Image 1 (tube, one colour):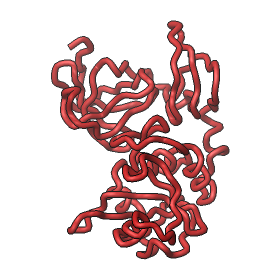
Image 2 (cartoon, helix red, strand yellow; image 1 turned 45 degrees about the vertical axis):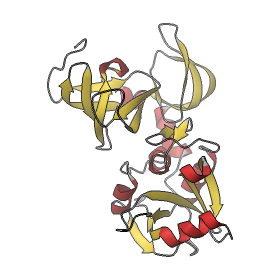
Image 3 (tube, one colour; image 1 turned 30 degrees about the vertical axis):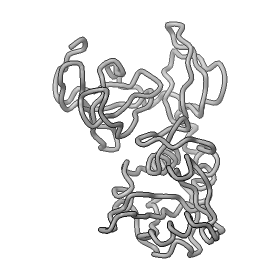
Image 4 (cartoon, rainbow, N blue to C red; image 1 turned 180 degrees about the horizontal axis):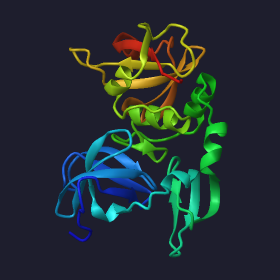
Length: 258
């Protein structure tokens, strides 16, 4: 291994714009999620040049040592990318997605970045603010199973990353997000509060397989393969796909904002 494990409590920082989190220690296996630049992970196992890691949300998976660097311990003070072009200290120029962290010696050349202590006042943990971010910051994103950025995102990745931006921790998968939020209804067409989470299932056992976020006025934003990516639905629409969604709704939940 080019970067050997020191102990099971070893911490690493993602050094690339996006790092794949995989189900097995091989590049050809399925993507389960993604890690972004500046995120800190705990190394819990290793196999050759592969590391099994646990993110700050508790989600585990495998990634290659090439995506990681030793953690310096100060990543929490790094700036937040809102989508920007940067030049690293070594002269490398590249884009960072929304939610990535920017190391201190990195220059922002284009786009938006904010200091770490400016995130909370800019992205308040309020339903209206959360819903507004969900409706705008991932607009036009393609659907990508396991994705968490506007470059490609799945349904629970969209919900988790928007919530995190507003200081609200949520687990990675839709069924986990249902357990971490409070039921407030069962009908997708009800007048839901902005930022409420709508859960759906296309399985006979009703296990949750999809999530979207209410925007108010009977609208919901979600990332759906059937739509090709992020879209806003009118939940009362006379549309076969929306009608199927209404029938598949398993419940509406409210995030725990305090």
